[in-house]
Length: 627
Image (cartoon, rainbow, N blue to C red; front, side, top):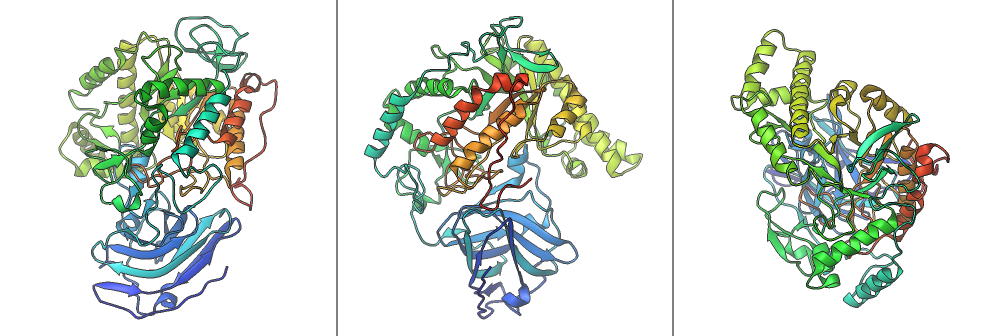
């Protein structure tokens, strides 16, 4: 790696500046560069306690994330993930509290760890936190850099007050169709006429649904007991969904099949060549106004009755590509004319009132009543609908592994019944083990109360459980035995068989993958939580994950996150991942569609164990793939 370094003078005492032109090129499996502070500027202080912001001016050649680390004593390296805009000089004002303090008490993992900013966004999940009283060096790290990207840093400063984020050149970053202006790619639309030609070609080429599926998406020429609703059954030591008509069913699903994809506009108007219609969004993290370029493009494509036309066209797309389930934010044409798409419902409302890390006061006098009311109101209109696969009762609780912090937050919060019981519990001894035991008991009561309520109000549909994030510990998994299906979101190239074996042995229930994806640092967007080097490898990644998972006897569904690329300037929490089957202009990724059709036609035999799964691991970069 070639690095040039020039040192300029130290400026004011209130804001320490070091004009430090640095250029780093990232290559290989793991590329890292560390600069001691004395090498950057001999007068830059080691004690950063008086300052609240680390301010960088940088330009990243790629939208691939890089890790920005502080080398501290005695804590060691503290790293947070920076997601840059590609090809533009920006000022990034990075709050040092993300390095000094534990993550907050968001209701789920995304709300806890994603932090939106105006010229980049940051994820604070990695590498913990610690004091900044003795900072020795700065480090930048990139894992599996794709295409040898570069990072230039021309200014480093410390500030006591926020100088603000800014895109310093290259504006606008987004064109009138929602595409990134600083990149080119095959198929990029440069005019409405370009888009109309592409839309017409897709409509003409769209094939009919596979002929080996029933109306619900179950496998024809298979049979089991028909009950008029979806259920699960174990046959020959393999779990299956069974559709209402009595056909074996593997849930090949998509998250977020909808028409909205808002991004924050207010305060960033100069980033956009033209603004889409904006709608008030009070309470959204990162701003009060949002605009959806995807919605604007749908209006351009489908005309005045665009919602109905989009729903019908999307239903045809899903059937032709072999997707038979949508969930988490709704089906494209629920409540409209046939054909329909089976859907999974995401239930909310258990956290009415104050909740901490998604944990409400489960011991409050009215908790059970509120849960019952929430279950009744949400399930009433769906309990007789045969198209509903089932319902999830929660998503990615962020406290597992942070039970002690959850207890601290309860103790420091407003008086409550759960606080009262926790104080009494800890009065007999305060230790990490006792804190964890208290939290697990509260969670067990939380789950048991909800499970009982949903079954009272809907005996027809499956309880698909909580979509846990990552790999929860055994004691968390055991609490989920009351679900009909165990759901988990696992972001990897594919979960290992030992992971599925462990979960299956603990819960003795079938497993659904609630979320997974793979993305590319491309078109101005970040690669998602799992990276491929290009769209061809991303398509291989879809095949690898789905087929490897479906080969396990307990796995009965894999649900991709998500239908649509995230906005290039970020959703409400900053995320701007290239993870869609569809781009912002409503054009499909041809590589992904071809891969999905091929894999979905193989699922019956793969899950039966009669043919082997696709075994080509996707490449993260030219250096290969992490194992």
